[in-house]
Amino acid sequence: MVSAGATLIDVGGESTRPGARAVSPLEELERVAPIVELIHRELDVIISVDTSTPAVMREAARLGAGLINDVRSLRRDGALDAAAATGLPVCLMHMLGEPGDMQDNPHYADVTLEVGEFLSRRMEQCAAAGIAAQRIILDPGFGFAKSLQHNLSLFKHMEALNELGRPLLVGVSRKSMIGQALNRPVGERLHGGLALAALAVVKGAKILRVHDVAETIDVVRMIAAVESAE
Image (cartoon, rainbow, N blue to C red):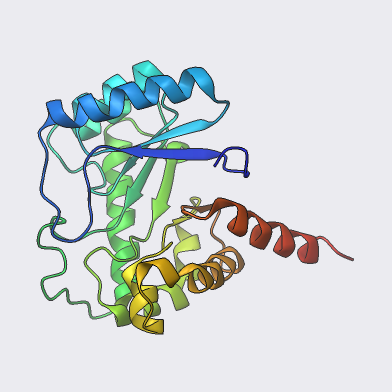
């Protein structure tokens, strides 16, 4: 991935897919710590640690992680203080409920507005805990507590989230929203994912979380070539 052009590697020890089981902090740490340590030693790349667990945040930071990526937006007990203590940037993601129940009939009156309000409140909580806005990245949470129509509407109106003034991270690679929209199994979602990657860049996303690095790099470089032309 690094040789293909990735500038961050996201490492996680607890699945957050719909219906995923929770793992203990010790099990998560045993999965994550050796990988973070090895990548930090071997590769010149920023390590993003996908975790909601305070102990994992602290240990990953000690081992060389450069970003905390929390799908729960630091809402677990102790997570705000742990993230603040690391001094690392944090990515806050929108999600209602927990991965085990988040897809149980999610409802929004205005999904983009409500996602924006949620992220704004979490930024306020971070500020109160000593995490400055300059350390924050925002993730709209595509596929987390959202139906297909919620995901499509949120993507369509994503520019509104730029008003929060922080970089947006978008992760939709191979997700079910592509499968549902195009009727494609996981292994046939590359083209849909690249279309969304291009659209995300146009709508202001600064970080793309993907599986297919080389192909997505070409998309980003092609957009940059066009946009930089006179």
